[in-house]
Length: 492
Image 1 (spheres, rainbow, N blue to C red):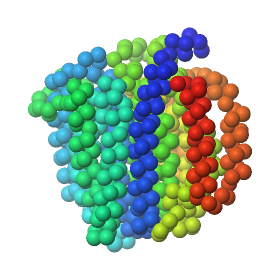
Image 2 (cartoon, rainbow, N blue to C red; image 1 turned 90 degrees about the vertical axis):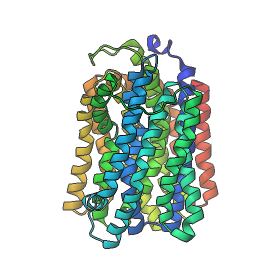
Image 3 (cartoon, helix red, strand yellow; image 1 turned 135 degrees about the vertical axis):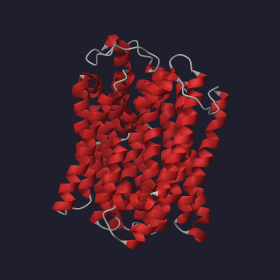
Image 4 (cartoon, one colour; image 1 turned 30 degrees about the vertical axis):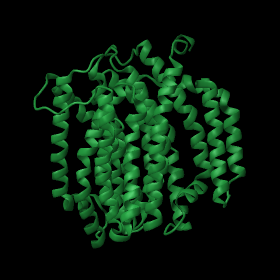
């Protein structure tokens, strides 16, 4: 272990991780405010189900491109110096293709909604079709933002790169608050489009400051062909967890009104640690790996590749394990604190906390999945990663199909399927890449924290059933501050 970790630039990596987590954390907190606002104003009904179903399509591209696919292909191709002509041609291609796809989605919105839903409720279908037809045009903004975000990561400007999402969430919140009395839930839909526009407007000046601002130009650079060949498997591989949510939407609407909304509220809470820990550790490690050369043999990971993945895995697990403990013991209290107000009732809290607990079973593999994938992306093995990750989709379709369509077990099966799929894909990727040791070693190094994990579980168990939201906030804040202090003590 000393041979790898003694030479690891701990402070540099840890500070990059911390800057990324801070920016993503601000964005996710604002995202929570957005979800709290939706829950308070609209609760969980067929109307909110229509919005969440329609939002899944453009949001899928936002999450996949902004949190994986584009950067995983682009960053390794940039090397030590950016090829201006290549990125200009790429930007032109991305802009034109995303706008064309948005037009196609908007035109086919009626058929897309009918294909994705398991209900025939006319009001639901009509609203979802209208919402999707409008929100499809968020897609070009999401693609352009992901492009410049990747370039800023290349320059190690992590905070600005990820903070653009906070601008989006803040815009949606303010626009909804201001126009809700006039337009109702349509204010959310319009806020999405305006948020995308302002998100791009925010990131462009920083791109210019870092000398990575480019004007799209028509052309077909030789590297563009390689990019196109790799982006397809990378898109599906990085977005398999997001793409499977489309199948989840079908089974959720089949389960009844409000189930899709409950799942969405739970998944938003579940995604906070995924984003803060998994996405940031994966992206920071990839930015440091970019530009290096590795053997094409997956069985022989080079020295520098291992040291970054070991350190990334250690930091990720340091936060992931206590987070999972917190969700297991404190899911109902956390859900009540975040959502329970206005139209969101105690019965809604019970449903969402159940789904959140089942999602948390797959928290650790979901967080580590991105780090394992970097082994493939750094070596250009895009298609191998893609085919392996299809297992996740298969699991998330098969289990709900049996549990809901045949046995009518309810929406909780969808959350459980997500966790089962996460573990299967993670172990499969580790086995194929022979990288299990990369995560066993950090676990052994983290054994010194076992007593504090046990104390955390005991403390949260004692404070369960706290009904006062101020006390609930204090418990969560105190627990978080303890682990931030430990992170500073051992990693900064």
